[in-house]
Image (cartoon, rainbow, N blue to C red; front, side, top):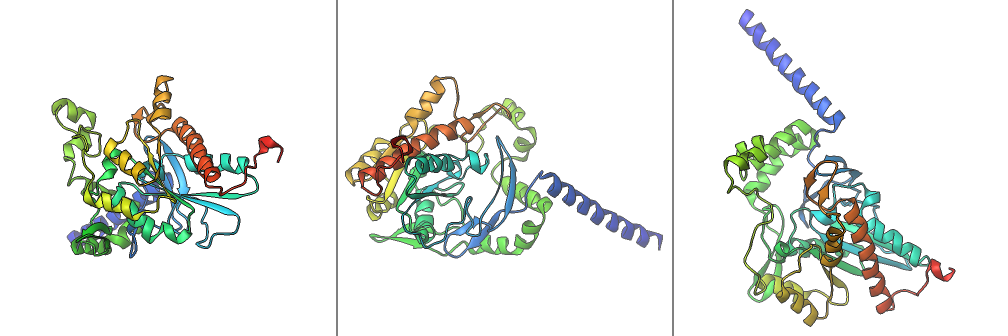
Length: 358
C-alpha cells in the first residue's frame, strides 16, 4: 500500500507541477500555444482570432483576425471607392517582430491615406513564414484573391524564386504536362501526426514548446541548440538551417516559376526585391519583358547601412534577424511611393493630397 500511495502521490505531484508550469508559461508569455491550423484551401496557416506574444530578435504582440491574417479583418466584398493592396511574402512581410503600428504596411497605408484622403486605401498583410513563390501563388489564388485586391505585391528574396516544397502540409504548385496546377493532396503521415497532436499543442504552451523542440531536433543537432554559438566554436564549419549561404548564380528560371509568371496578370501583380542584394537578372528581365512593375528595395536598404543603421540588426537584443523598426519605416515610405505611383500612373485615383489644400 505504501508503494501504491507513493506512486499516486508522485503522479498527482507531477500533474500539479505540469499545471503550474503551464500556468506560468502562459501567463508570463514565455511560449505560445500552436499558432497554426490546417485549412483545405491553403494548408498550414494561422489560427483565426488567436492572440500572440513573440520574444525573438524583436518583440511582437498582436492577434490573427477572423480570417487568419494580422490586421483589420476586411470583408471579402470590397466597398466602393476603395483601393485594396495584398502584400504577399515570407516572414519579413508577416513581421511578427514588431507591433502592428510599427509594421511597414501600416506605415505605407497611413502615408497613402494622408496623400489621398478622398479614397479608402487598405493594405492587407498576407505574409507567411517560409513561403517561396510557389507557396505565395497558392495563397494568392486560393485565399488573397477572395478579398478582390486591386494590386498584389509579391515581396521576394533570391531563395524564394524557386519552389522548395518545404512544408508537407501545404498545397504545391506544380506542372502537369504544360499546365500549372495546385496540387492539394498533403503528405498523409504529416497530416495524421498533426491531427493527432492538434488538441494538445493548441491548448498547451508547454506541450507546443516540446513539439517545436522535437521538430527542430530533426534538422538541428541537439548540442547546437543547447550550446548555441559555442557549438560553432567547436565545429566552425557548422551552418544553421535558414542562414544565408553561398549559392550558385541563378542563370535560368525554374519551369514552375516561369509558368507562374506567365499565369499572373501584369496589370495587377507587382514584384518587389525585399533584400539588400539585387535579384538575379534573369528574373528581373522576365518581369520586365512580361510587363510587370518591378521595384528594388536594395537601394534604400543599402542607404540605411551606409548611414550607419543596419536594417536587420536589433540593438536591444543584440541579434540579427528580420527588419527592425528603422527598416520598417524606410520600407513603409518606399512602398507608399511605389503604390502611389501605380495608382496615379493607372489613373486609379484622383491626385488629391493634403499638401494641395484638400
